[in-house]
Each structure stands twice: as C-alpha cells, then as structure tokens.
Amino acid sequence: MPQPDARIKVRGARTHNLKGIDVAFPLGALTTVTGVSGSGKSSLVSQALVELVAAHLGHEIAAEGEDEGEALERAPSSPVGGRLATGTEGVKRLVVVDQKPIGRTPRSNLATYTGLFDHVRRLFASTKAARSRKYGAGRFSFNVAGGRCDTCAGEGFVMVELLFLPSVYTPCPTCHGTRYNAKTLEIEYRGKNVADVLGMTVDAAWEFLADEPHAHRSLGVLRDVGLGYLRLGQPATELSGGEAQRIKLATELQRSERGNSLYVRDEPTTGLHPADVGKLLTQLNGLVETGNTVVVVEHDMRVVSASDWVIDVGPGAGDEGGTVVAAGPPAEVARAHGSRTAPYLVRALAGD
Image 1 (cartoon, rainbow, N blue to C red):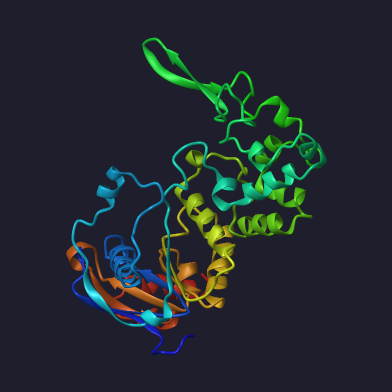
Image 2 (cartoon, helix red, strand yellow):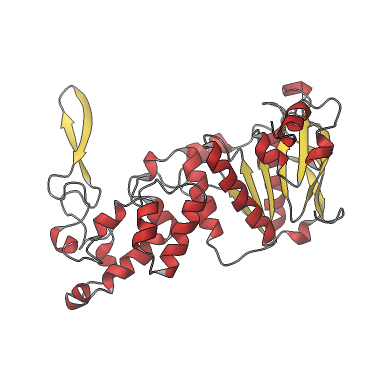
C-alpha cells in the first residue's frame, strides 16, 4: 500500500449531485470507486477528478476525432467546482481510457491504431521481391495510392445505389475485399500477403510473427487483455465500446515511458467474460507496479475486492447520493455501516 500522505486530495468537488466533497486518491495504487447507479461515481472520477487534473497539467480534454456535435454532447451540464490540494507532484501525465471508438471509418482498425501495422508494412517492404520492385512501406498501406485497389480506393467495398431503397455496400468486385491491387498482393512474407496478415486474428498473428520481437510483444499485450480473437484488420466500426477501451489500454501498455501517470477508466469490465476480468486485473496491477496510479469506476466486486483502495459514493442515487460513504482498503469498506456496496463486498472477499 502507498504511504497515507501520498495522495491526490480533491477539496470541495462539486458538480451534478456531488455536494462539495473532499476525496483522497492514493498515489501508486489501484483505487475503485463504487456505489449504486446515479450515486455520483462518474461525476467524481470522469468529470471532477479528470477536469481538475487536466487543468493542473494544462491538458485539453478532447477525444480523438471528436466533432462539434460530440463536443457539445460531452460538455458538462454543470461546471466543476473544487481544487487539488496535494498530490499533484506525483502526476505528470493523465490518461483517460474510455469506450469511445478508436476510429470513425472502416479505414481505422486494431493494427493501425496500435501502430502494429507500421511494423507489418516494413516487414513486407524488406522482402527480396519488394526490394527488387522498389516497393517502400507505403506500398502496403491501403490509405495511399499505388498499392491499394483503385476501384474501391482501399475501402474493400463499394456502395451500390438502389432506386427507392437505401444504398447498400458490397465487396469490391476488383479486389474482392482485400483492399489491395494484384501487384501488391504478389509480395509475400513467409507465404502470406499483406491482406492475409490483416485477416489473421491476434492469436494467429502472434504465432506467425513469433520471430519479430516488436510485433510479437505488441500482439502479446493484446492477447493479455483478452483480445486474441479480433482480426488485425477488423474495422473500428465493428468494435464494441469495451473492445475499443481494451485496445486503448493495450496501446498504453506498449509505451516505453512509464511511471507517474494517472489512468482513469469508467467500468472497464462491462461486457467482459469472467475469464477476461482476471486478465484485466493483471494489466491494471502491472500499471501500478511500474509507478502509476489507476482509478476506476467499477461495479464488479471481483475487481473491487482485489483493489488497494475503495471509495464508496452514495448512499443512494440522485439527490440521495453525492457523498463519500466510506473509503479505505476493501476489508474496511466491507464493514462500513450505511454502505450499499458493503454486503456485496463482504461476499466477494469471502470468495462467494
């Protein structure tokens, strides 16, 4: 456990139903914020804490590719009140891992977002056949003219307009969905062309690229967060919010710069298979072990019981919430009177 004085202390947090509360988040620990729906958990963590820390660091709070409509939707309905009292010296970077899409078009996918595709393209460009044709890494990008299919411009599909009916999309008749032209697909790495690799699952690619340390490590992290079943080229538009969130986490875990970062996540276990919850906990604890602070809003008692610190908000929802009911190690919060989380936490700690 961190030292008692090593904390981010928020004084007078006020927004939505938060009633000017004082809250302390231990540095270098995994903290879960609990409470019934509408109790003020997200207001405290995803709004008050995030906005106050972002203001201290001089960061803009904006999602990648956010448009004007989404910015208006994101704008808080009530301003954030409060201040950071202590602990700011222990946070050099803020990372908000949310469930927003990693891209807005089918051109964005797991491989491009994580940077893995850059490595794959360089592998193909380094083959003897590619060098003899003077193909650079750009040749193997479906976003650049030259290697991509000219008919669909690298989309892999074309739109067919129908009279009196909505337009439909169908696989490109030229490339049949591969996104590349025939000359590009003639280049192979270990018997596979670039479209074949994009069609592989993370698990299959992890085995296929076992001799490539950088790619193998990146794929390993994706497997560790339970994404081994996704295809490398699976469009971002086909991913769930939980999958997008775990891709963002995996991308962060691959960064060489570690320590003194504050990671904020809102209900990361939503939609996860029970077997993957354990994988998620391993990754969150890994962030803590490398000197970071992790704060998550969570309902899953397996995560709550395994955390270092619990902040229970409530006791009820709406006007009946917005206060800190209990704060401390899981075993201590489980004994708190008036906490609606406590009975469930007791069972989780007992292994029920």
